[in-house]
Image (cartoon, rainbow, N blue to C red):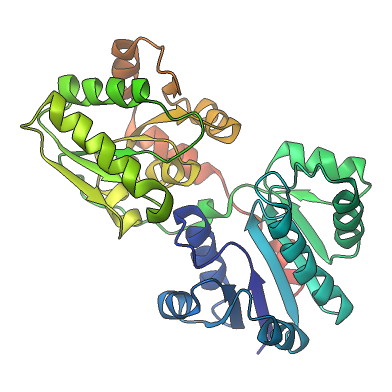
Amino acid sequence: MVKVCISGYYGFKNFGDEAILKVLTEHLKDADVTVFSSDSQFTSDTYGVKSVKTFDLKNVVKTIQNTDILISGGGSLLQDVTSLKSLIYYSLIIALGLLFNKKVIIFAQGIGPINNKFAQIVVKNLLKQCSLVTVRDENSLKLLENWDIDAKLVCDPIYSLDVPCQEKTNAIGIQIRDFKTMNYNLLQKLAMLVSTKFSDKKVEIFSLQEAQDLELCRKFEKILLSVNPEIKTEIATDNIIERISKLEYLIAMRFHAILVALKSGVKTCAINYDIKVEKLAQDADLPLISMDAHENLEIIYNKLQNLNSDELLRFANSKSFDWTEFDELF
């Protein structure tokens, strides 16, 4: 049995990263998998794999020594905008894999920005030695092309996620996340939209990373109930995929929440906090609200109403993650 270790932003219970890990571990069900995780017990219990604490460096090194293949990703691990320390850590893991002469796969990552010049040199030299480099966006691909690194552009791994068809409930989902451009005006306008157009529906407010988003979700719930105390609300923090798949409508910020909704045929409106969300909305022809919510929400509502669930499913099913080169390394 092939031994594989996976390094990424795992165990922090961030919906997108955990969904990618779910796809990876399901695809590697015939391998002996160990995941580096901040919450190794959670990861082991959730995915049925071995797990080592992210910063238990003694066991991390031992695991890499005894593995056949090291997978780094997905997500945006190799960037220093969030933290230079995290970039150093993920680079160190890759370096250890190469040092011990293991096959190293960069899996569907977003590379950069990397502002530190020395870090650029380190990452560039590490990636040149990897067995396979796949990236999830055009900017990452262009950056690596400029570095003369052979990389392949792939779609998001979540397109490979099996989302079963569910009977729709009379519910609308609101998924928001804490972000530097989050503001009261957006929350107020969303509350007015839900109150005036969806007052007959249950409102499920999704927190996809409790440590960051739960407080914001509770704040939005209070605003919504102050606008209309009769609305039925619930804050959802678990069984996210199943819950989203049962919705009739979703208004969402996070890329992977929107993607799961598309794979379930849920009529979806995107909130444009990031270029990747804007591009997905444009590709799938979804209504899009800016962070200052200056749009005519009557027009947004009409477009949301007129979406066709079958067309959304067709769009999602037209995307296929290419595992060919990945599988060849096994």
